[in-house]
Structure formats: C-alpha cells, structure tokens
Image (cartoon, rainbow, N blue to C red):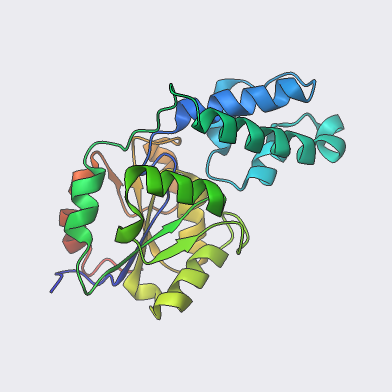
Length: 228
C-alpha cells in the first residue's frame, strides 16, 4: 500500500513529462509568419505554454490583431505541428526519469492522469509515440473542459476516478498548473525543468518544487500531514 494520501496523481504534459519546447517554438513562429504577422519572441512563447491554444495565441497577438487573427494562427499552428511531427528530424524526448518513475507510481491503488493544454489528438499522438498511454487512467484536455487555470480538468478527472480533493495531487511546471490545482482545491507540486521559475511556482501555491522527476515517489510520502 502507498505511504501517502493520494489516490489520483495528475501530470501536466509539455514541460513536465516531455521536452517539446523546440517544437512549440518552431510551430508557433511559423504560424505567425504564415498569417503575415511578426513572430513573437521565444521567451514570450515559453510563457504561454500550458494554456489552451486559442488563449495562448490571443495572449501573443498584438491588441489590434486579436479579433481577426486568433483562429487563423491557431489553424496554422495545428497544421505546422501535424506536418512537423511527420518530419524525420522531429524529436520530443521524455525528461530524464519519467518512464521508470511513472512505472514505479503505477500501483493498483493509484490512478495516474494527465491534465494538459494540448488537444486530445496531439496528446494521443505523443503518448503513442512514447508508449505511455497504458500508464494513465484519465486524460483531460481543453477539448472537453475549460483551459488552465480553470479547475475544470481537475474536477472532471476527480469525478471520473471517484476521488476527493484531499486524495488528488497535480504535478506541473507552470503557474497555470498550480493555479488550476489550487482553484480545484487540491495540492500541487512544481518541477523546475519546465517553463516557469521555481519561485513563481511556490508563489502560485506549489507545496514544493522538485529538481528531478525521480524524486516524486519519495516526496509523496513526505507530504503526509501537509494537506491544505
């Protein structure tokens, strides 16, 4: 039996499980260029990873182009990503320690899930590529719930798995992840290898920020008694 209170552990995807930064930057820049727009700076793109695509694009667009360009840029991004995924140079590596740690966490008493700003089609393709889908019981995307930091994805996952807030934990790399967790009334742990800084994650409400994915199982037992 696990020595921690969590029956449902939810993970963000991009920036937490997989290093997709180069692909996201490439495809976002391309989608702006194809829409005859100045491509955003890389640091600005990194700040919006984790949001649903339409909200991310809206934040990146200049104010005078938000109304007429969101849909066009989003469609361009989807096309660019789909095409790039088929390219022989496409890479989307797992972060170190992801697979063995997920396998270690995958006990009969624990449900693992994903809550991501990626759409379900892209998530399924990535999970199939890495042969990870069988480790997860629930898959939450903006296709069926509001995007982060709205709590909808967490609430839906808890309903599907019949778990209470005190039994649920989210692990993510952005303040959007942590805010979503807090809005849903659950605890959250941050990771330092993603898109937002450790101090931002702590300020948003993360109980702690981990240095390595393999630390997760041991820190779960450390959190006994820290539910808030």
